[in-house]
Length: 180
Image (cartoon, rainbow, N blue to C red; front, top):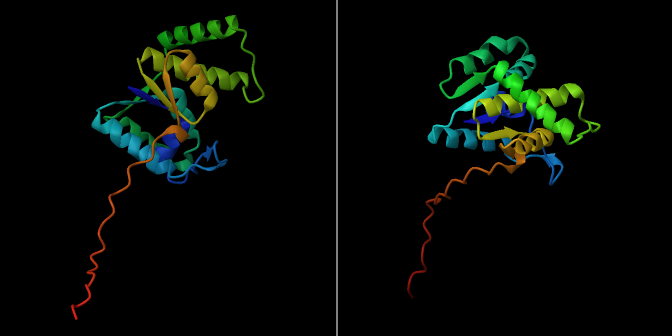
């Protein structure tokens, strides 16, 4: 089972979502939607399920506007996607992540509000309790916390490009010079 964060959900299911920046070029990521579609195709073929932590779904639906019901239907009717709640087991796991961060004296950076850090820890706790193996994210901080807690993390710009279609022949006939 793999986990999608809000940025992946948005790229996969929201046509209006813009491509994230590629940190190597500081420009929009080339073929971001195609990369996500290729990943989903590979996950379908391998029969991997996509875990959507409830906090991620909440954040995604907040941005959905009047489209909430339609978007929610996508996930509740899907055999591939599974929405996971934050319950007692996840709360205990979250507290263990919090304890480890406190022992390591992790301090918040400029971009790390307490709410953001707790949100990320909830996603990681849900992922761990659900026995997910990999989290797909566009958030480098979430990726780091995931890896610190035994999960693989793949950032949006690390996704491979889908293979190019083999070049088709154009069907032109080249006439050879006639013998003299």
